[in-house]
Length: 291
Ligand SMILES: C[C@H](O)[C@H](O)[C@H]1CNc2nc(N)[nH]c(=O)c2N1
Ligand SMILES: N[C@@H](Cc1ccccc1)C(=O)O
Ligand SMILES: [Fe+2]
Image 1 (tube, rainbow, N blue to C red):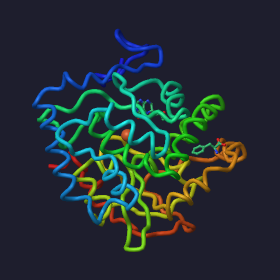
Image 2: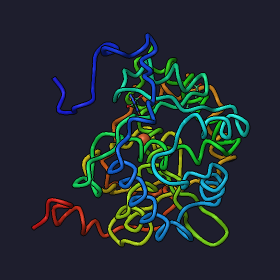
Image 3: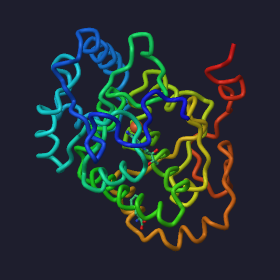
């Protein structure tokens, strides 16, 4: 059994064989639309000057602020025209192979539900605000769009080789919690950060976490936490360099990783490019559970 409410082992009642369900946009309540509006307005006070240029451009191109939860029938044609991606609804977390199959076909899966008004700040499961506001703007960028498709194909391969644990770390430290170096400084592109009011500030400005240059093999060895702010963020030089770094055949890399130890979250190696050597004060105080 899982602790999550929206996790299933087979497509639940009403879901198609590929696990998708209709968005049923007309059924969202006023309160649910208001939740989207509140979260959107809050992030717009925080993200200019913090989110990367590609994200801000994508958000603008998709016009996700027309009042309430976006209707996929309106959003998808715009996204598809830009990069060929579409967004489909699923009932919750889907099995890895289902997730990868959608990505490999340029379909991003989104939760259909939105968080309750008393969960505005923290939620463990991905809802439609995280999935759409967090992920979809980046999918308008051609390099990121290609990277995500390649990740889906790479996921299928990693699964067959028993290397998913390592590949999942790449997803975590890029797609979910990635930072990018731009001309004016560090910027956010990770969906887990950009959809969180508190982590948007913490990830860039707090002295606690390490901020290290992205290195593919290093990232794939690094443990991560799912229950609190990250203790390390990895900084890419841009989306094109990220795509280039992951084009290579991961076969030899996987062979090396099989014999390698995992790296604890706080580790800073002599060869790391260090943007911030964090104090780790936040984590040591007990993080979000601190008194
Ligand atoms: C690494 C792994 O593929 C990842 O955890 C997947 C699993 N299933 C998912 N299912 C949904 N709906 N959304 C997700 O982000 C994921 N992530
Ligand atoms: N190049 C990787 C696939 C991949 C691409 C991009 C991101 C993640 C994985 C492989 O050979 O397996
Ligand atoms: Fe996500």
